[in-house]
Image (cartoon, rainbow, N blue to C red; front, side):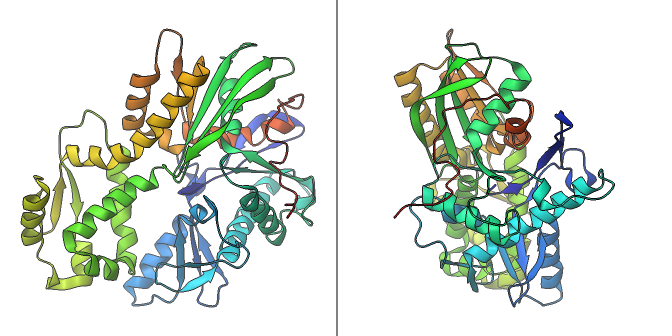
Length: 421
C-alpha cells in the first residue's frame, strides 16, 4: 500500500486457515511501513520500520548518502509517464529508477513470505509452489498494472510475464469478499458499494449479487475514486508547517531525516484524533530547530500566522506547538469532502443497500462519522469491519480456497498480462 505493506497466506491443505504476517511480533502490527532504504549504489539496505530506523541512526552519525523512499506507490496514479524509465527523488534529493524501487519492494515481500511459510514445511518451499495475489487500486490504468507485472518478474515472484501464478486483484473487491465472508450480509439481488479508503487513493466499486452459490457478482458502475487517501491529510499538515516557517526554510528541512521524524509524530496525532476531540494536540518543533537553528523564532512566526490566518495557535515552552482540534478537522475536511461528494452521487444514482468501508483510512473516526451520518438511511447500511485495513490482505487467499467457485465479472483485463499499443 501507499503507507503500509503486509501479506497473508494459507496452504491448499487448509484453505480456511488464513495467517496474517505479524511484523515485529506485535499483535496489532500486521502491516509495516512502505519505506524503502537503498545504499548509495542502489543496492538493497532495508524495508519497513527498519528502513526508517536505519535512516535515523545514520543521520545521527552525520551520514545521509543512503536513498530513502516513501509514498512511492502514488507515482503510478493518474496518467503516468513511461514508468519503465521514470526517475523519482529520494528524501535527500537524489534520483533513482522507479522500477528499481518497486522491484526491491516486491523482492523483499517475496523473500519474507517464503521465509515465513517455509517454517511450516519440512523441505521448504519455492516460488513455483506459490500462487501469488497482488492487490492493486481499482482506478489504476492498464499501464500501471502492466508495470507491476514486469516488476514482479524482476523481483522473482514469477518467471515470465504471462505466468498464471500471479493474479492482480483489485483492492476494493478483495476487501469486499473478505468482509462478506466474515459477516454474510449479502443476498441475491442486493446492490452494494465498496469504499476502499487507503493511504494514497480512495477506490469505489459497485456491484449486484447475481447469486450466492456460486458467489457471482456483476458490476453496475465503472470504478470511481481518486487521490483522496489519508496521505493527503498529511500534505495539508505539511502545507501548514511550510506556511508557518516559510517555504525556503521548509525545503531545506524536507531534505533531512528530521522531516521523516516530524511526520511520524504527526501520524500519531492523526491516528488518535476523534471527531469530538476538544483538546489541542502537541507537535514538537524542536526537530526543525535542529536543522534551522535560530533562523526561525517560533513565537514570532506563530503570532504572524495567527494574525494573517485568523487562527489561535499557541506555544508551550519554546518548541511545543499546540494545534487546536478545529485546525486538525480542517486538515481532514478538504480530503474527506471529495470522497463524500463522489460517494453521495453514486449512491443517489445506484441506490446500494450496503456500503462497505475498508482500507486503512476507514479506521479514521472522523471519516466514519462523516460517511455514516450522510449515507445511513432506513434502506441503506454502512458496514465497517473490525480491522478494515486488513480486509484486502485477508482476501488474497480466498479466490484460491473458499471462493474457488467464484464467478465474478470483474474487469476482464485486470491481470494485465500485456498491454496492446
